[in-house]
Image (cartoon, rainbow, N blue to C red; front, top):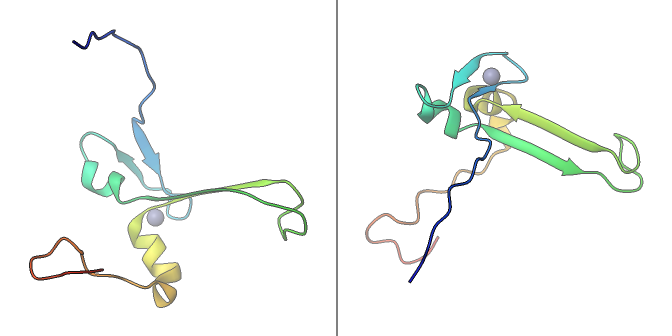
Amino acid sequence: MITYQTVERKVPRTVICDICKIEYDCDKECYEAQEFIHINSKCGYGSVFGDGTTIKLDLCQACFKGRLGDYIVVVADCMDEGEDEC
Ligand SMILES: [Zn+2]
């Protein structure tokens, strides 16, 4: 038997691209919001950003592709029929 409890938790309401500044409603524009790229990385010793700093960046998919698209490796969905491996 499993019993449940009701808990209060924070969920995103909107996401804002750090480049184009467009704000997406996570409910009404869920497909765009779910495709955001979120970077949250702890830097180590010798980082160009400073030792021990943390860098954060939230980008919409259009800006991410526009700025880094030439370097991104896109892999087809491995769940497609007929594919044995990714
Ligand atoms: Zn953007």
